Image (cartoon, rainbow, N blue to C red):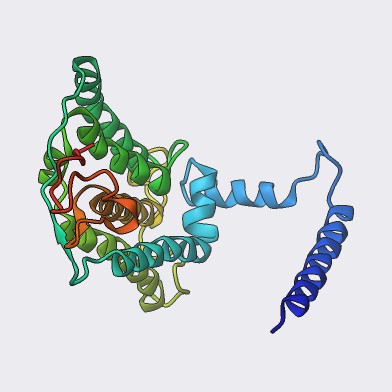
Length: 268
């Protein structure tokens, strides 16, 4: 396909999308109107199934199948990153040299690490009750672990980040979501239908039927996925270098001498 033809396809596709957006805009209700049919139904369904957080009810109950697609996109992205950034035959790992960390930075990072970690776990556990959920809490948990990289060094991060276990956790979180969906079929309902468990008592951790379980599965998958994703990129920037001494992706540009030593690359 020539460049000219590709441009015509792009222009025609863009015009088509613009026409659809304009048509949809003209049929939107007035801003600030009193009629909100979708919002009212979403809130009613959320309360009927003992889910205090309507957003979580929409994500993990009313449109749980869409959330599965979003989770799978992240899972596929991490899988692709692992495959593309795997160590090749002409590369080797060099232990990074430690770098001095300023005392205030070290203290701040080490004090904040448990606080941020607990906050992320809280956000995941209470996703069906309050703002937040598995996606947000998973990112917070993964971020908490990397405060050790800031406050100590890369080797300290590696000790609490066995990448293989987090890869298993990533796959387990994705599988748990699918298994909960299949449980709905086994129970005689639809895939991911919130009919497998009792709805519980409103405003307790066990309320919402399958919403807390799906939320926890997403939190596990997202947290592990972000850790694996950052691990692969950090390995490329800190540890991996070619046998010739030139690092892949610019990782070895600052290394000293032609011998491939790691004198110019620190753990930060």
